[in-house]
Length: 288
Image (cartoon, rainbow, N blue to C red; front, side):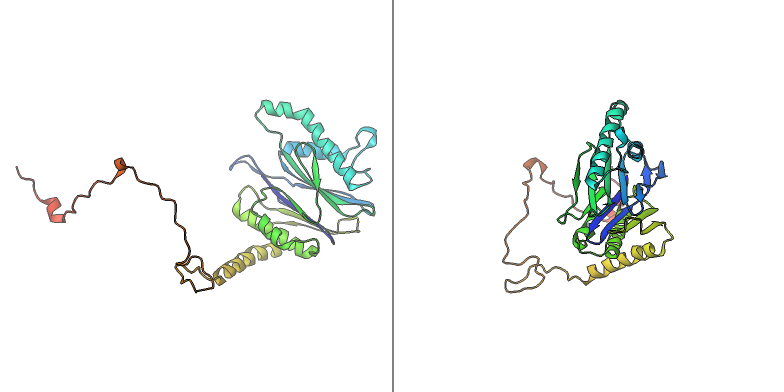
């Protein structure tokens, strides 16, 4: 399993991926999930993948080479066209491999995040599914996640908007990844982080993050401490409050409600308990 997240902002794009691949607790490997397609000054595109590694590598190789008539993401004139070419590659690999994989009980499973900028076109971000279809990010949904997405989603939902700066978004992505790392052992270091400034048409800021990275270590320790501090600062709930009481009332005497209690069948009525014996009674010799 893996975790990848990408954000489309007014200022540009942020991409973050882990590098763990595993087929069980004793078969853990490291494979980088982020691939960059860059022609400085003309285009900069990023692809991140989750799912079956052999499928995603086949798709990546297919789109890296000229297709029929020389058509490829290197020649696409818009990001939408490039996303369609990538979707076509997913379908081509499915047609070639899906039946054989199914014969071995292996599901055709791949998810892709694809984003970047071509020429003067605005930055665009897409999520591509196993069927080759895709959706595009808009202001109402500024980010995509693939892989183990549930652990890192809440912080992004609360923080990121199109107006978020690139540095703030990168920080949020790293906190999202830290939450995932702490909750799921199938996601692991090192991480690849790429921050792209709109209009630059080249990779600006990129780093591979391992366990020694100072900033990520600060995130891991400080975020947990701050969460605990905020938690401890919240007031405890008030129970059985008087009707006129206000503030932190979870339940008051004026509130109705009761749990659903199931009736005990007569056959399950507890037998009357035998009287307790003293130690002397337990050890007394039996009468003949």
